[in-house]
Length: 155
Image 1 (cartoon, rainbow, N blue to C red):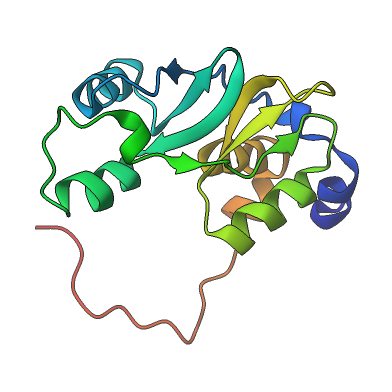
Image 2 (image 1 turned 180 degrees about the vertical axis):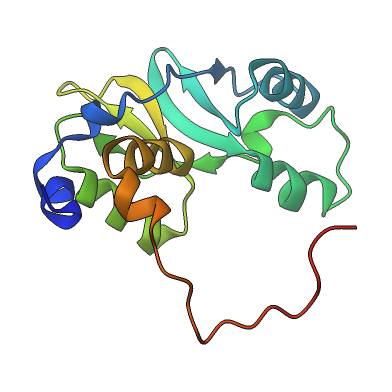
């Protein structure tokens, strides 16, 4: 099946979003960083009473905490992205890709029909899906003749 057609038909659930990793809004940023490192993830969801309040990403920590020279004791609520854009698990992959592209997001919380968080969709997950389902398309792309390498690769 053609790649674009598949994106218009297959749902987000086919991408097998990763289970959500969550943290409380009152926990310090240091705890969030430690959890992201331990879990090897690029973002955490901020939940309060099972309600999605926000998302905190590595980028948020770099820009809003490190860039602003705030202490790592700062509560997560002070650096999270509030009311993040979500995607339904039954929505198409194309819908998720459009939201990611339009907002410049690398992660989207995935919600069920009751708006409860059921996972996280990452760009990495989409790339894995592409490689798994369309290896010939991915591995056999011709080089772009207009791209010229500026520096030599390697040591």
